[in-house]
Image (cartoon, rainbow, N blue to C red):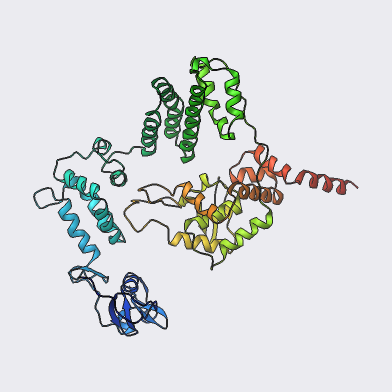
Length: 485
């Protein structure tokens, strides 16, 4: 039976009409504040010991001994000082019990193939999150039980043929991360499933054509990039956009009563003129289809960008100032990513997959490398980066066995998705392309364009163009005239 709502206010949050969990020296504590307090660990300001900090000492979190809280939070089973979850024992002991039962091979022992997963889950920092995951994801829990009892094989095919593959996708990724399954690129597999879903509703002829294009062109290129270690997340996005526009073009032909073999130049021109500029992404498909005899030879021009967005340097500096302000709302990893975008002109597709090895602490001087060159991270930005390094995101669960990412993601073994960072920064009002261009223009005005290219991983033609657009060529002309006179 739940506790009844009581009168009065919580001593921590001043809320009224809430359910109270306990009475501590400062007064009655509501259930929400009790949970927050009993999950906080750190150095006690009173005794300087690393402990659970449920109490308050001069307004700062402190241990039970220093704040006069009579309750003993030590788990009677493992001795860990933590909030009691069930029968007085902590979340880690509860998780261990539940996993031991779930992964029982029928003899009372944990199934040997699943032992590494058991060790990883009970060893993670936040046992509550693992318990919640198992409770919410009943399909994953049931599959684990079936694998443990030998009713299902621990194999990729088991996950692929599951009635709800998306429900067990995280479990599959965990099994790959802890080497229970052989490595496989799940993004490639998802791309293949995406192709099947997109072509399922098309006419048979169009579906066959799109399948051939997606597999022979995009999938072939993706596998080549994977084999050479150069596959990026953005490659899948580009492939999906191109394939989507190819489908759109075929549907455009169908609405005009034409088959692909009956396509005319007027159909292409009308397609390009009658919609957004993204329709130009169908160019690769049309050229491939014409080359292989699926379409007549038609002309499909390149789309050239007529403008390059750029924010003002005042806007750029304003964003930088806001990001380094301690009072700014916590953006997590997006704060560091935004600084690398605004200071060094790095695209988020490159930032999101940075390694920890790209950050160097050289005798107290913090540097970052985008190529072989090391670039100093000046104050106060080095403080922000150091704070990120000491509290990397998504490291409280078993998602990462041996993390090497600067921005570890929620998916096991994967970095934070670029789209997640992009959305957070756009919500902050940052024009991503405009910010990158403004950063590059500032850099090429401070140092020669070839130096910027070599240090920041850009081609010389790109940095030379930014130097020209920034007006540096005219400035160089004035300097040379002044020197000659």
